[in-house]
Image (cartoon, one colour):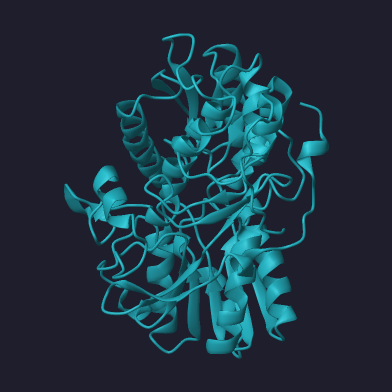
Length: 433
């Protein structure tokens, strides 16, 4: 993927202007495009209806609760600024139970019962894979807030995009050199036994091997598992690094049992923050994590001198400097992921603004999204600057490695966007709309 500089040239047609969208920095970026002046206000006062596929129950419930809170904050902000094309956003929320079959049913309801203009919000990769084909069949723009490599791999369809959160393949490719060069050369991996975990298994193993490291063992754990000690004897004695990524309501149990098993004398630990999302770092039994490392999509603890718009975003979503609810310090957020909902809603606003006046809003929305390249760091995109690949429908951005020090996470390494690039595996623009 190559970074492109796109300029808006006077005198171009509306169609060519739509195709030339490059820099995404909020609705103002689109209002300056020739042919769009006067189109910001829509022809109707009817709300823009967005289907929010939310994991209210099932193993994704902790994420779903914070995705919903973030969504509500973003919608309030956008509506206070005039909505989309002069129309307010109306969120139609449906619980998918973190279940692929229910996910597809929810998508169908959005399209056939609720008359939604687009759908968004899905996190768990097996739910995305189960839901996205139905979105494509129904020609419903489906913007996922997931991390699996499902979109960019080419197995989905042109109506599915991942525009504001990076995927596992890009994340682990950027992480592997740090792990190899700073922590050790022999790794045992522990991961959940579904698509998201398989992406970690496959793509970290590849990236680590390219660096000259060795994967000693790969331990897959059922995602609904509630006890983990019986898996730990499979960890080879010569393991230098234990790479762990776990999800679901039992993550606190997982990290506590890990500490009890090793008793403070185990291998170095490198985890993805999924193993600690919504978990209080001060929980008894987590002392053994001190000195270990975690990947973070957006740093939970506010970092001095980093992320210009982080404080403003925290205030908007009701999160304090430690990543917990401002109303309850024990209520820890899923901060490394939930920014994706905030950013995706602003992305939807901007591409729908660009597509205003089209005879087929859904198709024009996809075309507008495919024209985006640069996404500037802003209050709309507080996690940092990004590059969107319109062919693969996948965004690329900065990654953060944090070290546990004194019961908090301090960023010790930030990658460049270029560190996360990999060759295109699909060109969705060649598919029919």
